[in-house]
Structure formats: C-alpha cells, structure tokens
Image 1: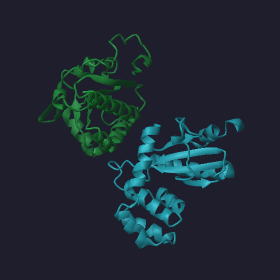
Image 2: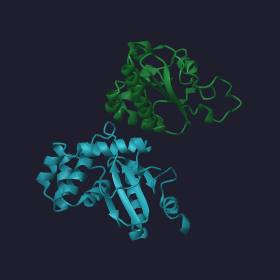
Image 3: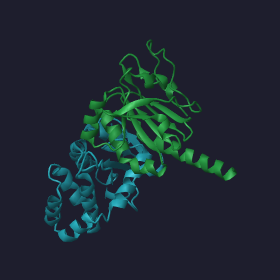
Image 4: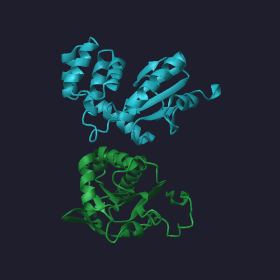
Length: 178
Length: 174
C-alpha cells in the first residue's frame, strides 16, 4: 500500500516515484553523530522504520519526531529500529535531538546532499529537502510498506504500527510453516 | 470513523450530557501551549451548546518535550478518582506555567481534595497505564499532535477557533 501516487505531479516532479513494497531497500552509510556512522545493513535481522522528513526545527517535523519519540516502546515491541533522516548536518541534528530529547538516531543525508533520499525516490528537487516519507523495511532488508505524506501533514504513527503488525503476523505464519 | 474516536461514557471523562447528540473528543497535553489556547474555546463551546454536547478528554502527553505533562495528566486522573477530574483539568490548563509537583498539591488543596493521597498516587504512577491507553488509542485513531479534536468521531483538521469549531459541531445551524 503506497499513496506515493497521490502526490500532485508538478513540472519539476520528473524523478522516479518512491520505492514500492517488495523492493530491496538500498543500503546506505550515513553519519548519525559527529563521529559515528550507521549503515542500514547494521540493522539486518530486525524491522527498520525509516522516516524521511524535510528539516529539523520546522514545527510539523518537530511534532512528527516528538510523536515517534513517545512511540519507541511500541516500536521496540516489534524489535523495530526507528531511524529519522533529513538533509540537515550532524551538528544541526545533534542540537535538534538535544532540544527535543530524541532517543533515536537522526541520520544526516548531507553529503552528497539527499543521495539516500534520491535512492528511495523521495527527494524534493525543488526545495532541496527530503519528502515526508515513511518506509517499513523487513528483517531481510526488503521494503514492506511505504507512504509519502503531503509536505505539511504529519503522517502520524498509525500506518507504521499497522505495517509492523502485518510484518509480525507474516513472519509468524512463515515460522509456523517451517 | 470507528468507535475508537467517539467518546466512551463508560471509560472516558465526560462533561455535559451523556445523551448529548453532538460529540466532541479532545486528545490533549496539559503542558502544550496550543492545548492551552484551545481550552477557553472548548469552555465557550460547552457553554453555548449546553446539554446538546457530550465532551470527552483523553490524555496525549508528549513527555519528552513536556517534562511536566505526565504528572499533570496523572494528577487529573487522581483528582478524578476523588470525584473532581474536571476541576483539576481546568486548573492545569489555566496554570500551564506552574505544573511542578508542589503546584499539583496546591491545586488539589484548592479543590478540597485529599492532597496527600493525590500526590502519593501521582508519584507512584497509579494512573500511568490508563494514560498510556489513552495515548495509544490516539495514535491508532490518527492523532499526530496536540490538541487533536474529533467531532462525532471524525478528526477535525480545520482552524481551531470558536467559529470554525462551532460550525463543524453544528453544521445545520451554520
């Protein structure tokens, strides 16, 4: 289920659309603190919630990341790792995470700017920022669910939880069949 | 919309008439300034709609950015256990800058409640689970920030002023 196609198409919107469920999630290595990096492949073996957002500090983003920060126990129930990602640099992320007391990593898609967002088809060329896009990636690194929200709209966490529940049910069915 | 986003008189704190045909549900955080701004608007809506309105409140504390929000919510629950949820609810919203534990004790005394019991229940997190249930029901119902209002079960995404909210609540009168 993806609503990427619901995005209004503009003349500058010629990039490829957001990656769809069933697609292998492109691996990446990005800085998460001024002296640490994190690779998607480090998270193999557990679900990953990848939350692209346009910018630190903007009010809606604050709400969205603040909400996810309150949801970490719920995500943990699914052993899921939450990763926030924007084109902001590590020091900006550090200040933002400190101010809002975030307890999950924020990744800097900073150099080359937006490269990971481009690989996932969620880079807004016009404004030079990540779109507000969610991906739930399964333990084997395959995209299970994706959603692109209108820029100004906080997508909340309900879709993520439903996707994680669905993923858990599927893996239990598979395990039972073995 | 599902029953999740309709007031449940069996569980929720409700104000107004349980038989009220117009149902307004708020997910709020006592330390959230936007919720504070919305509070007098809700009071005025209650005054105008009277028994036609059933108003319910559920907790949605963003505890990392609002360090006093959890204890404030628990103190409202603790006051509710002593029969005065709404008295505490109003005091919390009217005093958003003073939500330290000692303030909560003062408000309990002001309302004539057993303040020692209230602060004991708050600091031992007696109502934490219920507040978490509220929070989770909000997430599943589409709450993504505070305050979020549901009008007859539908999320209200319009402007949060008296005129627009009243129009949404009473479209036939608009």
